[in-house]
Image (cartoon, rainbow, N blue to C red; front, side, top):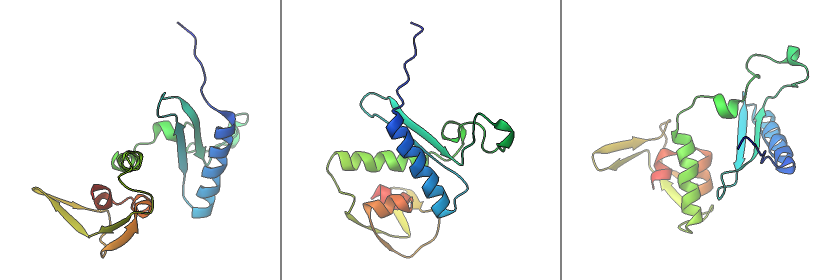
Length: 141
């Protein structure tokens, strides 16, 4: 068929747009985006970007605002893999968001040496903290 069914939920979309706009402003970030997906069906329930633009007045939009950053931005896949890895750990009940994780500056596994993007002393984090700091080592542990 040629039928297309939109799966965006307007209430979730509104909440996602407000949340990402508020967080970008609060953290003084250049931009942010969020995608909410039903993991059982694959349906996209919301997709929001900030800063946004008024599609009815494109003359006010900057080139950086045009398009859909959630779909088009290029970034290292490591950070998205961390979210999926931690989500799997939580779903399996192997840890909770408050589980304590001791994160050294470097981690040897086999013949590999893993590190985070910044040098740091040993971090004492929760699983939430591992995700907040986007720690490679914390995710491995």
